[in-house]
Image 1 (cartoon, rainbow, N blue to C red):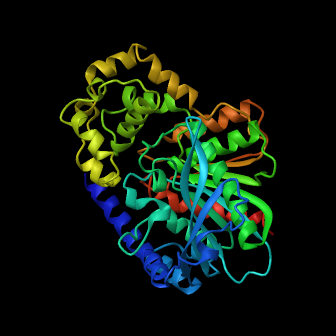
Image 2 (tube, helix red, strand yellow):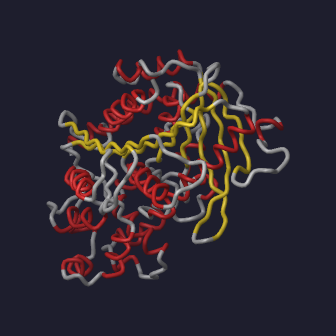
Image 3 (tube, rainbow, N blue to C red):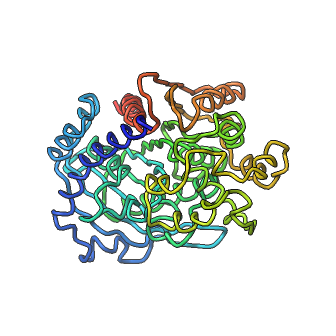
Length: 421
């Protein structure tokens, strides 16, 4: 428990520093009322982009100072060269075959004469509605992956981060967690909407598109690359993709956590959210008591309603899987008597295919949340399938899953930058 307390303090310190960026952005008087900022398509010619709203500007000096105060390495701060403009956009995507509206965040550097590359960032899973990347404001300034978008924009990238279905304007839908089809479609439709935004705002881009994502965002990024390569889309060509600790073979992850683990899990909100999401998405209609013990089963719908952060949810659950999970459910898993769940996990795994484009897979050897072995096995599977453009990166210097994100971002940035020369 001492480790978890220390991890929480590190996270709070990091987010406190990042909050300065957004306080500054909001203080610039982001204008959502002007015709040019509020509606990027006066002639209604867009297919995907519905609306864009300015969220203000942030100076390069403010971004660098915030990053320095937050303790980011000098190596990372060196990339932050430009002031940025931020926008919230609303765009069209699909959910279960039906057209819906989704939202996301766009940032880009200002005052750059040359055309810039693009970066599409898979968002980490956000549990509280207020933590959607596009939703930050004066009362909500701790959206960490909105900060990633700010940093990427300052580094010279036209950057897009989706809220993902179940967050932002689509918050009334239960997030389809670890659903490869919807993860990829949400990202791809954001890219299309972002291209329409570029045209409307006359932003100069050079055609290079990079995808990055860590944790749930790593899974989303991998699913997106897989769909783009297996179902080619005119106008969308990916220069390179970097994924970190995403968890790609979902059956293997379940086995590691429940059947082969020590009976505990450091962040129970994630397996709870996954099972709850699948039960809703696939319309199994099973009572949550089939999967979880009380008092936890009764708490879950409220805990996942968008009111609470992951830390607040974990505080109302238990790290003991023996106390959290229904023992009948666990026995069924061990005896292959949960075919619907196993089939869904297998269907949504994104490890067994052959990427053609450049792909970097990163993982912390000591990661307690997503096992290092999953990324290594994914890398080896792809090599066996004939992939030629793979890079595997790891680190053993960091103890936690969350803190490894900074190391991943540095490695991915250096790699991407080598292709921008």
